[in-house]
Length: 362
Image (cartoon, rainbow, N blue to C red):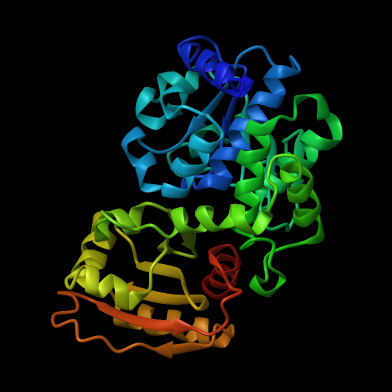
């Protein structure tokens, strides 16, 4: 099997991070597979066509945190991409790095994280599938569509405008992200669109004999939480938001609340410690897992009892179908209120929950 051209590009771009950067390409702060794959492939497309001189894709997490994303570790290995060739947050020095950046492309988000917020005027491209925050009105290219995965939009661009670049590596990266984000293109999961299906099947058709067989190890890798502490589980796929005057953190974890409790009987204190360390008014864990069928649980921690009750009220009003889970956890937390719930409407993911909370609290 030939060494992927993307890998050569990534190694080259890594050596150029100390030079003037024409375009910095970033996925969102959670740095899940969709975000990373979309950013890397988009940057490669621009570089391969000579659209910009020096293009650097940045993974906005510490290098040591890459291992916390087992599905990404698995897919990058399948695509023959060496993580050593990626540029992570601790490979650069802010703000001197950003001083050398002329332009920014946002992939899989349309609002900069607080760390990069002062550089909003440099954004020239947005490609995303989340709710449009209606920011950065000088952006030259804005593609925001409610598809299941940002990789679908990058894949569509690749197939439509740059088909000669399409190879096994790019197909595996983007196709795997789409399958995971849409639960194997399953309409019952409430995430897939016809465009997701069309693009994923085009990408994987040549390289994957059986979509269902390919999805099994992908899903197994995604739900692998062995060796992860409560702190790891909360930070591995985490995003922060501000709703009105409140600072919210929402984590995605891939195990049931009951399994989490069995894994760490003191995990309630772990919620409290993590929320306090990030000065949060609310910490939600959205837990997705398989138990004969796809299921979701919620963990909700607030330092303030009133805010906790308002959040639960908002979730009930928006039809999440919550059912309280009782756990014999002993000491729940030292300060504040924490509660756990089974989520009846499994179609509501973090992507769909955030606009609901934003509307309620703002």
